[in-house]
Amino acid sequence: MTVRLTGAEALALRMTSLLLRPHPTARPESVAGVVDWFGAMQAQDAASGLWSLGVRLPGRTQDDVRAALERREALRTWPMRGTVHLVPPRDARWMLAVTGVRVLAGAATRRTQLGLTEADADRAADVLGEALAGGGRLTRAECLATLRAAGLDTDGQRGYHLLWYASQRGVTCIAPHVGTEQTFALLDEWAPDPHRPERDEALGLLAHRYVRGHGPVTRHELARWTGLTVTDATRGIAAAGDALAPVEVDGAPAVVDAALLDAPRAPVDDVHTLPGFDEYLLGYKDRALMLDPAHANAVVPGNNGIFQATVVRGGRTVGIWKRTVGKRAVTVTVQQLTPFDAPLRARVEAALARYADFLGLPLRLTW
Image (cartoon, rainbow, N blue to C red):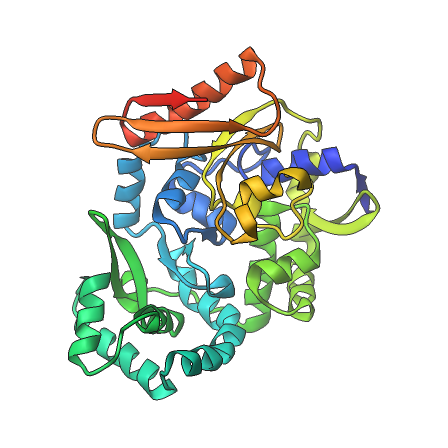
């Protein structure tokens, strides 16, 4: 039987899926648990990725999250759409294999634009594989220097492309920062026990995890998030079987984690201060449930793909915030997209104080 949901009910369930409200069956209490719940979490900006985890692990600090990443509870690489995500280490290889086919096929055009050949890219992967073997870990600058020493041109965007290609091929992965510098390691060494599902099983895992962490969603949303075709998205939903349940959202067909059907659907007046690159908005193409189209340009100025950090009330975006992290304090400026009364301002300040505690710094707040 298909359950019919209003937009408000769907939003309430979606915020539960996103682990921004109590879930009836799942309570991940570790970095590994949160990342496994989502399957993959946007993490192209390292600091944003840390807070995406921190906001879902109340009481943990940035140092706690960094220590978990050093323990390899999750790693960063380029699966979905060739974009950096946090993924469970043992799932990284099959995710790259399943979602990277179309991205790698389209990379030839980009290499031509950059003046690189496929042989250059393959050689770069080999060079980095040799340099990192035996537990090695190199910063981005050291990786580029290694490539140049091997006779490869890294000027302009060539260096980025070669680093991306080596990870997309499953040779390297992004290890945690050392200080402010990104580092790279061998994927085989950071994920020595990879899961190797058959393709249909892999599609089912992708579908289940995406829907579990974002639903209710459509098969088109799944296709967009993974970078797969709608045909593969449909196959994945079928492969997930009874783990997913059909629903209608304002009359449109969608799917949701079956375990979520018993979750409360009433709107909740909660307040969150989320990072810009969070699954809350980036996990969807149609963001109308969470974001008034009139405010879209404030959240993504010029539609340039750079998302501002958001203030969220009851699942709806009501403001944005910018932060400057100093040695002695974190300074945050809040811009209201809808009017804040005094009680809401106090709740936003409390939410931002939790972010400051996460960093281990005092908060300086301006409106």
